[in-house]
Length: 366
Ligand SMILES: Cc1cc2nc3c(=O)[nH]c(=O)nc-3n(C[C@H](O)[C@H](O)[C@H](O)COP(=O)(O)OP(=O)(O)OC[C@H]3O[C@@H](n4cnc5c(N)ncnc54)[C@H](O)[C@@H]3O)c2cc1C
Image (cartoon, rainbow, N blue to C red; front, side, top):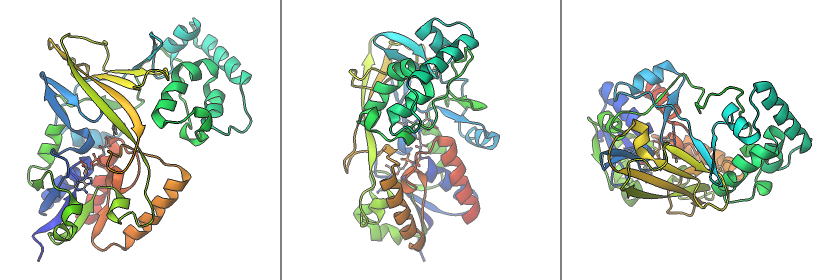
């Protein structure tokens, strides 16, 4: 007889939602986490009275009322609306691309003027069959938007020239012909008042949780602790990289406490010029309309991933997607182990989708 019904590897959102549902169904769970804290990438910690998003800005958004109600069991949310701005050579442009952006770029005032300008720009550089990301972006939005707001940022993010990146990375570049700076089209969005960590703490309240515990240090021991394993770490690592390594992009974060009350006037500022080494600066207090005397900011630097680095973004090119499918086949044959979450399924998932996936799994198993 195993000690637990479920061993959950990883205390991120996926594992924690599952643990909460399992507890409700009368099942026992043990959660192991290799980091020194729970929560995975949605972890927030308090500095100077400000909730700091340790692993990058996290804005909760969904159009699914069920998911919105579900997350509200664990925290109250504020009315934060994601309206990032882009800084290009000291000039500020609104995102997503909208009438404010077009007015700043070209002085156009009406949607008809903006549409005409974009059409003119698209025609000038149109390519019948775009072969790379640069050609694709020029087809979608034309030269000015591409060069001011897309090119440098994308090159920094992927560590490669846009002319060398595959076209599929950018399928759409939404343009909005209203003066609406709201980044998301979802019906609901906000930031949990008091941060995300409290949500995970509540979800894991009834599980046995071990932080600073890497599954691979004692794989056999942990496998024997439960009838079934929910694994939310890297799927290729689970199989000892026997078919090859999946690739990721990583991020380096540099956080500073500043002796001023307002550094940039917005939670998220994207830096779109290639020469600026970081892609974004996050000023955390603005997520919760903070009025503290000090402020905390984080510079975000994209970087090449090597084994041992945090794997933030999967690189879903043809090679990696095919390799993942091969690992998925191995996973199907693995008795009593289920692979979930962004690393277990080698997929970028926003939080609302991770919750939906974990609830789906819980419904199936419990
Ligand atoms: C920079 C960035 C910004 C984002 N912004 C947003 C946003 O604004 N809105 C949004 O909806 N989503 C956002 N996301 C996505 C969000 O972070 C994910 O949806 C969510 O964190 C995924 O949860 P998870 O449980 O699948 O993975 P994770 O949070 O990665 O959890 C997996 C956990 O498993 C642990 N683990 C791995 N291997 C082992 C092992 N061998 N032993 C023990 N533990 C292990 C890890 O340490 C980690 O804690 C963002 C993601 C990133 C990277």
